[in-house]
Structure formats: C-alpha cells, structure tokens
Amino acid sequence: MSKNIIINNESLPFETDCDCQEHLTTFFKIVFRANLKGATFSRPDEQAGDWNTLNYASGFIFNEWINRIDRDTASIIKNVVSKVPCPLVQFNDDLHAVFDSTLFVLSADKDIDAQSLGIASCLNSHAISFLSKTCWSQNPISITKQWDESGTTKEEFLDVPNITTLEQLDT
Image (tube, rainbow, N blue to C red; front, side, top):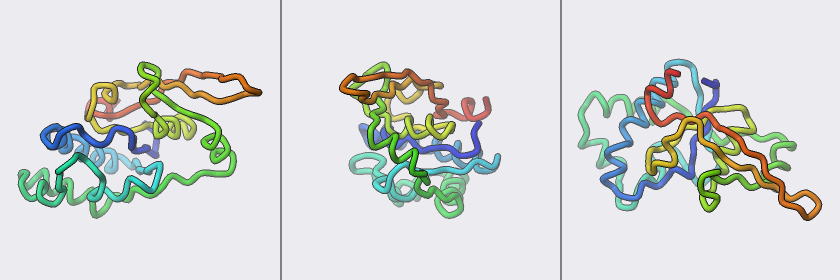
C-alpha cells in the first residue's frame, strides 16, 4: 500500500441514502485502519470538502446518521473526522500540465470520468473508493488515459490500485 491514498471523488454520491448507510461504515473503518498503519489521505479537488461535509447521497445528513449508529462505530468515525486530515493533493507544475491536457476515464465504460484515479496513477498512489457502484469495487481499476498529440487522440491503459474493503487494504 502506498503512503498517500487519493480519495476517488467520482465514486460519490451513492445512488440512495440506504446504499450510503449500508457502505459508509466500512469506508470509515478502512480509513481508520489505514491511518493507524501510517497512511495519509488527499482529495483531488476543493469540491469534495471535509469528511463530514462530503455529498454522500441525496437526503443523507451525516450528523443525524452518526447519532443513529452503534457507539463503537461512531467512535471510529468521529476519530477519523477529527484526527485524520484530508488536504488537497499538492501538484507540481509538470503534473498541472498533464491534468490540463489529459482525460482519464474508466476503461470498462469511457463515459465514466476517472480523474481521481488518474491522479492516483500519476502519483503512484492507491485510490480509495466508496462502494457506491460495482465499477468502484475492482482492485485494481483499469482506466484509460487520453490526450491529444498533434491532432491525434492517444490512449494509454493503466491499472490503479484501489481499496473498497478491509481485505484490499491488507493486501
């Protein structure tokens, strides 16, 4: 596992509040355990926000949810929210140039944006995805890097290590 893990913003939001509640505790348990192992987390853009302000699902209210779950799980999640920073990814000029002229999409469905996974790939990092759709459960996730070179679209296929389960974290 890489030291810095990139949050896959494209794996949010969940389609339903119910799906969100079903999978969100696992996500926070992964973050908690990875943090104990020395991993850090970064988010690829300012739209994401902090752990407790992310858009998890339509109608999902984080503070209400955390007050309804069991105490032990709530304690883990509160620990993550208060003690595990998730700052913006720091790009050097070379990486800015790559992302300004490159598109990253899922190889299995080129209509699905995968910029966060592209960032993880360029930084040789793992990604962590919310299990909001089956396409985010893969490890690794295959993405396609697309760019224009002298009027011709070029493609490169990449596999990005991805974490959505505690078992994937431990491998």
